[in-house]
Amino acid sequence: MNIVRVSRLLALATLLVVARRTEAQQIAYAADLGAEMDSVSRASITREITLARDRGLPVEALVAKVREGRLKRANGLRIHVAVVALARRLDSARAGLGPNSTPEELAAGADAIAVGGDVSSLRTLRAATTRSVAAPVGTFAQLLASGVERARALTMVVNLLHRNATPAQLLALGNLVESDVVAGIRPDEAAAFRLRAIEGMSILSGDKVEVAAPAPVTQPPATQSQPPKRRP
Amino acid sequence: MSEDDVLMDRIADELRVFPHVDGEAKARLLVAVAAERERTRTLRERGWRWFTPRIAVVGLAAAAVLAVYLRTAPPASSPVERAPVAEARRPAATVAAYDASTADMAPRPIQLVFRAPSASQVRVVGDFNGWDKNQVPMARDSASGLWSATLMLRPGRHVYAFVVDDTLWMRDPRAERAPDADFGRPGSVLLVGKP
Image (cartoon, rainbow over all chains, first blue to last red; front, side, top):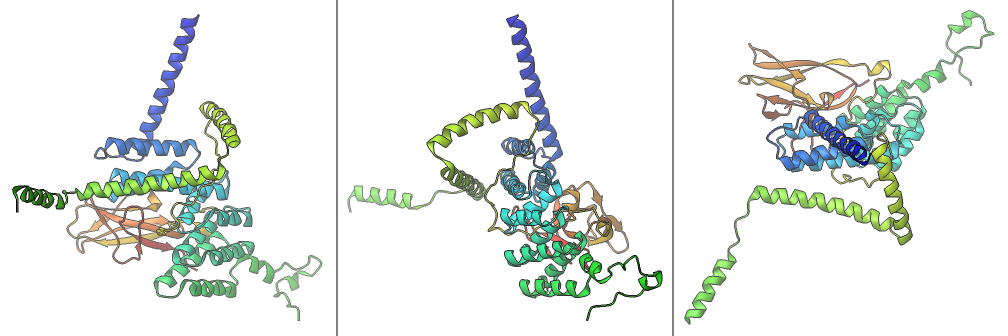
């Protein structure tokens, strides 16, 4: 009886070890860890990605970081350091955005952390909308990377979210500010200018609702096509 | 000057010369030291903040329970707040297309062009394809020596580069430079979607 139990335990342990090794190999293949990389770096990178996966972090971003490092001819140690740093940023992003965040949201959050964002700002953005925060957090990161001060960038994005700005509108704001800064305009000035322009154009869906409010159902159909009268 | 003095002078002269240091080994060592310092700093900060004898006992017990749980349960998502590790580095954000939930976030065609008359193969890599060099080969126009590829990209900020002949990393000379704090090899910025 004891022998049977011991045999079962041994078989189970063997299965577990084999399963772990297979997983590690799969990650190594996915990350395209080349033969030229030294065995210590290979093992440490694979282990780091496996640990991140076990913590529930999206592995794709880490695998992409490995590929990027290999394309740039970085040595194994440097790639390992970059993967560890990214995994920590993803951890921080999840702490701010919550455990149910999507991989896209976490990637955006990690980008924001990398350029000076903090966990508290990510929490604020998460609380500002019930929709996906991938684009808002991405815009926040882009504004920070462009040099816009953190509190100002956060206020801008939160205000736009409260006015029902679409993801594309938010990302367009980030793109415009970045283009302006590259052209030599000061970051805060560019951010204020572009925000005013978006508000002036009334392209936010929140503004559309205000201007084109539906007419009361009691009115005849003819009046519905007329523009709504403004209050004096 | 005595014989001993001469000998001592020769020994001193020998000792003044610095031994040869391998530059690559030194760089590796510096990177390792920086990584270790960052790791120990984070651990120390967290450890001192939370360490008291009673908490240590409770923590050990909880760790044991957690270890058993993790061995038996599927991977769970447990957010652990960590200090941001890269605040001072400020690399370029990869604000790619994060959200495909609305119609205005639909991918749109973007053509990339690169001049490399003597190249036998050029590929596009970027955050949009996970830096996978096997995904987007470029086509060569034999008359002009231009290589081109048309990608479907969602609005946002993308970082990309060209890989020439499978080995050479080239950024797009016509695009804004995307700094790279991790590996020190800049890419190019592509902004998709402006009103």
